[in-house]
Amino acid sequence: MSSYKELEAILRTLRFVETSEHLPELIKKAETQAQSYTQFLLDIMSYEQKRRKERVIEKRLKWATFPTYKTLDEFSLREQPSLKKIQFHQLTDLTWLDQLYNLILLGPTGVGKTHLAIGLGIKAIHEGYKVTFISMGELIHVLKTEEITRKSQIRLKRIRNSNLVIIDDLMFMAMDQREANLFFHLVNDLYNQSSIILTSNKGPSDWGELLGDPAITAAILDRIIHRAEVIQLGGDSYRLKHRSSIFDNKTVQN
Image 1 (cartoon, rainbow, N blue to C red):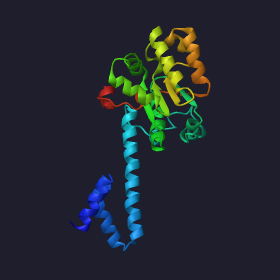
Image 2 (image 1 turned 30 degrees about the horizontal axis):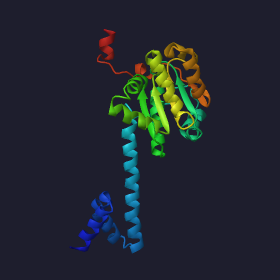
Image 3 (image 1 turned 45 degrees about the horizontal axis):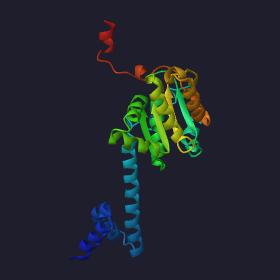
Image 4 (image 1 turned 45 degrees about the vertical axis):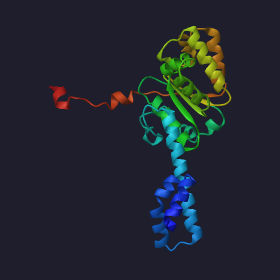
């Protein structure tokens, strides 16, 4: 066996699979730049370290189950005048996540609540945090089927192990007492161990309509608002403003 094949085999045995596949490029670079043995070894280890970090990010992005990939760079502050630049930067530095703060993003449909939540979630993953995104409707379904389906058990385990849980569209549907109780127990599990981002078109004072039971509503609010920042987003719907149309302007005018 040649030295190259032997080195490639050893890398695979050590589970440096992608590095073994990239080995020709690393060797060519070493020869072209007349690298020392130390530098060549450093390049091999650095490449493997980089790819392992990228694979972790890829896996966490998959597990987060974002409905779409929208970064903070794509979030337009010009379209959202109610959020000041300094506030936006305070959100994006993720200090609140280390402090176990929750975020409540309020506002009408289409003003960027979900985009902002997803953007913060994506940045958190790139910073090494575990994130889960789930709509309120889906969350209720998963909670109700945890005891009977393996899929729901895995999903809730990931939610409970996340550093950040994003629950989208809180006022999507009213809950019965059992559903509200299950939601309370999840919030209680996450309390003091994870941050939560909630998006809603109604403020906390109206959540009693959703949760029904005043005692459960108070208990949930107590845990969520204990350390929370409420952010009110306003303005016109971004989606309506920038919608595409099957008609051109001339057709509409005629």
